[in-house]
Length: 240
Image (cartoon, rainbow, N blue to C red):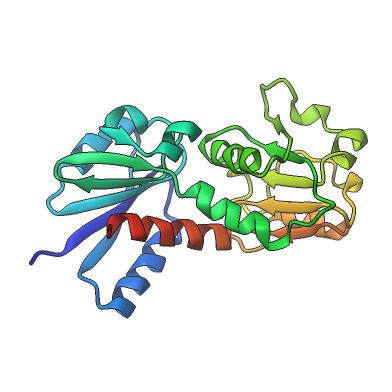
């Protein structure tokens, strides 16, 4: 029986933890799989990846979580509602899109959320942000989206907005390795010990955004647990 193939589709993904994570898993389970990074300059290049012999599944990361959808045959209910895909099952020549980011983010949110955390600000509006919106809606947590060109921009962030939104979630890639000194424009001085700040980035472990947030007393979480949880969910899908 030939080795089954998996991989990650994205752009500039050499930093990704996914290959190490899954290859360690394959070794521990003695599973006949391998996992590759497919760093593609255009989403159109995905057509060639689907032709790889014995490919059974893929993960999808930025900037292709939304752009991948027209290349798929079917979407799960969650992926359809969210409008973004981060996991693909390839079975019987059929390509089915799923979103396990929502599963991973929900697990992360519930780690430290408490009764004081009533409303949220989502920083960024890409594919990951859509999964966050799905989870916040599920838990009846009102939210505002902050983006460079949206109704509310980063320049609009002020003390009133931040004090009224106790959950702050960075869904942008700003601050990811190797650009670890960067962070999105944010008035950290308005954060308090009542705030929960989540950064979906996991490399580095403590981003500049989280470091500055913690300096003002906020509880902080990085994206490591989310990554692990969404990866485990993807593994279940590929073996279903």
